Image (tube, rainbow, N blue to C red):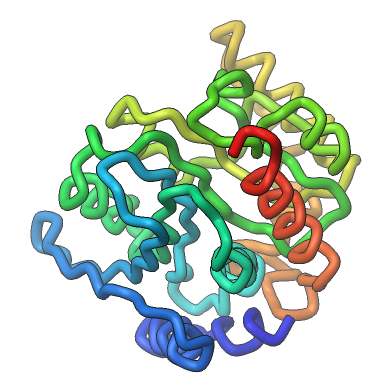
Length: 261
């Protein structure tokens, strides 16, 4: 929780500075990736491990919606990313750990990252968004469960060990920009088991090309996890817990050090 507490601010500049301060305290080298997307200026924070022309991207957006401390959405994802960086010293993989700017503002940060790096230099992307609430790691796999570009993270044994739930739908995020660029990606969050069933139901509707009914939309808005984002009643630091951060971090760490290395 120590990282979430430092990042969960309503001021966007303070959120970015908190990430920078933590990386400096960790003694981790990073680059500030500045760009303009249309009339908007963005600044991503990038930690590169074993740089190469084919890298796995693991990212989390550091911004929040106006007026929100964005504790679960998405200081929690940033916290997982920071813990992973702290464990990455012995990895043989080429990984860019990216703290994206402006996800809550049409994903400009992730769009800028792809433009700067070049989609041909990215093997796959893992999006961490809302990883501080619930009891189960949940991924929207976008059809990529068998894709070796994700190293061992999607290995069947690794998924089983960590009881990872798979659904065909999670709310839009930075992963969408990678989908637009035809880069394999998955999105990761933590959910309560009761909420997972609804997301799996929505995923089936989407696969079948059917729209959500008015009742479906009402049920979505009533989910516990929705209350932890975008100024909902539980959009605060108290909605987050360290066990969620720890279980996502351990799953990803196990996957990156699995037999596929």
